[in-house]
Length: 111
Length: 112
Picture 1 (cartoon, each protein chain N blue to C red):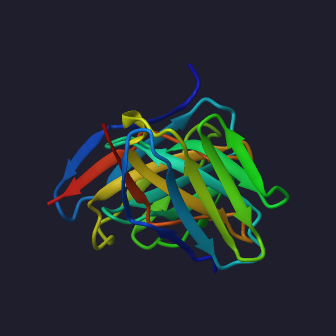
Picture 2: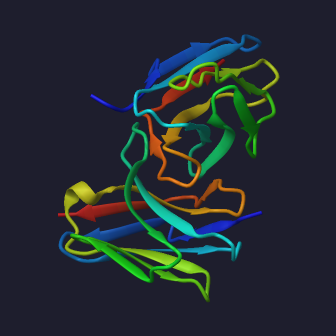
């Protein structure tokens, strides 16, 4: 089945700097890759997603890139703000249509 | 106000008791999901349902049961057979199996 690995597990950045989180997946049939942001004690919130027919997608300060050949995708957050502090999860939809999640990255933005 | 509701937010039970977690959505979504989240781990799929009166086991279904009698409701029962039931439980829904999944606020279950 699909296996998703996510790095780093924790990421500390200075306010205004960029943050990058990387994920790899194993199932070459996976075709959909969402990113979720989870604040403490709350449910995950979908922040951006990308499908396999696109290499990059942007939405204001966040962007996602996908390299199908290497089977990895990344989340980029520019001009980080304290409210970006949260746990971020990547996921890949496997050939059965189920989402497989990475273990998460705790992002801390220090003022 | 559309969305996914889960109740209660916190739930406490004694070991050996079954407990049912509620999940309701008014998004008119066909598909619904239950995930379990443990500290430092990603979300793991317990059960999912793509249509009313049908559901499938996910990766960690042992010790859990579900029903899908109505489109908007997908309750999860944590049975006494579940070895480590203490966790954060998340319900999600999507328009169909190929669409984006949206999550509810979660229920934190503590079993002592």
